[in-house]
Image 1 (cartoon, rainbow, N blue to C red):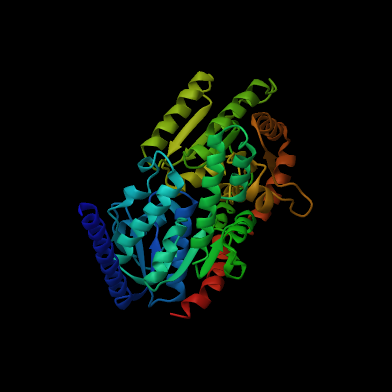
Image 2: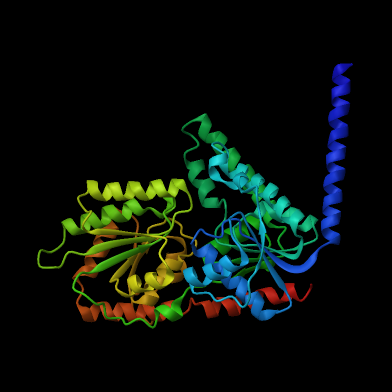
Length: 450
């Protein structure tokens, strides 16, 4: 009898929850505003995704002055602080301040919340966060700029047109293949393959709910088409790169000390330690008659883990006896970053399967010869020949990165200028103006339906 009553209670509770949720959705649909809601829980991450947010917001403001723009964020931000941040950190001048909707449940998308089954935990956590966002303000156009595809079905339930700018797939066939290759090792690996395949299927299902998908590179486009299977709704829109300001810098490098710059958030996948060890190896092999170079790390920290990662990098430079040869710059202002880029001989980037690589483009535009990982965006879209002239170097391990550094240090000024000029010309294809044009072309058919 008790068991029956318990089942009945659970059943009634489930019905009440379903009815309550349905009423909230109906209320949201009825109160929907003609506005664009940007789902970007971290508006202070300082990366390429944040630049896309501000450039996309400005492009919509230029296109339709009557269309309100709302930013869903978990940061302590105000409309005034966001408009100031867009300009100070990225040089993006918004036409007017966006409205801000504060999110209180951001912890549900943080990696630390899910020690196990992190991908699926963060994905379902994003649905809960999106529920909070849409209940507080329901826009006609829901624009995800952070890659939370599991929120798309919910946004459609609320009656939104779902638009997204996808920087990289949360899971890719490459990831599944790498795990499958190790599946014969243990039963745990086999379980991981099943988990990845199940997640991949779910990711494809929710991603297909988007009305318009913009992707940032050829590599991302091929993977998203394979996963989401909506090729007619997928447009490649290269991300906004500040090539106009950087191309005004002289190609000649001031000073006698060669500088190599690394611009990336202090995240594990950016592989900063590889860069440091390659630089150390290059110095060991450096010709005695050549000046000793400096390596400049420039990046931002999202959280405590990133702070600890930066400290470990500093400690590693001491272990390699490189503390006098390495400089660290955290949360640098945009104008200061431009100065450093203008003084760099080369720029180094070492993330495997970097979906695009905005910093690689910025190196090239500034006249710094790029050394990037031989995969994905840099390999397929960026570090390609220009008019038959090489534009940079691609490398895969410490040895290859060290050799590329040495080749640049050993170049004559004429050789370096020739490559730098070709790289700058190549970089002109990736600009904020190009992003704005392609972005508007992609989004206009959707906006016209509102």
